[in-house]
Length: 88
Image (cartoon, rainbow, N blue to C red; front, top):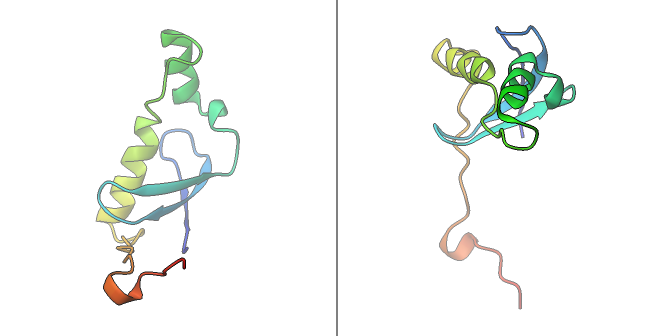
């Protein structure tokens, strides 16, 4: 994996990100995600345990980084056909 360090434009905290496709993003939080002020505010509003929407500010930061070429979509290629490992 090749993770890229990004700083959230919403709160200024750092995360490490790898983007495999438009829909698949891997995020490594460098702090407890519950400390994100936007996630905490949504959690407080909706109740503990009921919020799973992530951080819209971080999502926008990642989208901007892809658009600006700071974060490359790696397009993970899965093995096919004869390349698939066999367990026998």
